Length: 68
Image (cartoon, rainbow, N blue to C red; front, side):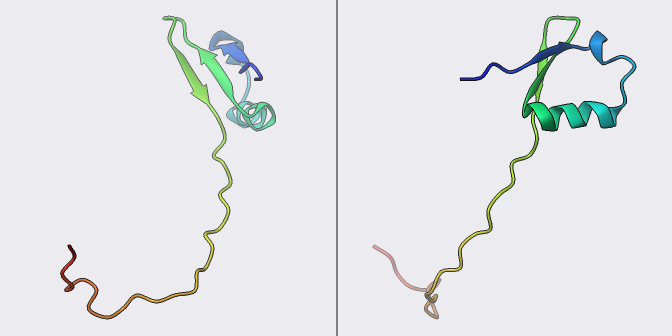
């Protein structure tokens, strides 16, 4: 399992948000260590595959049916 790169908030001083986001895309996931000891994990949104189209139908009156 790969370790998540950890950077400090101070090391982000002087770089643009565009550079930071580009680094997140390259690394996959980054952990930003805050001065108070807490951390924030930042990762890109995964690309989802489209849902499959299924053959079938919903019968009329399905809401009104009595189900056991």
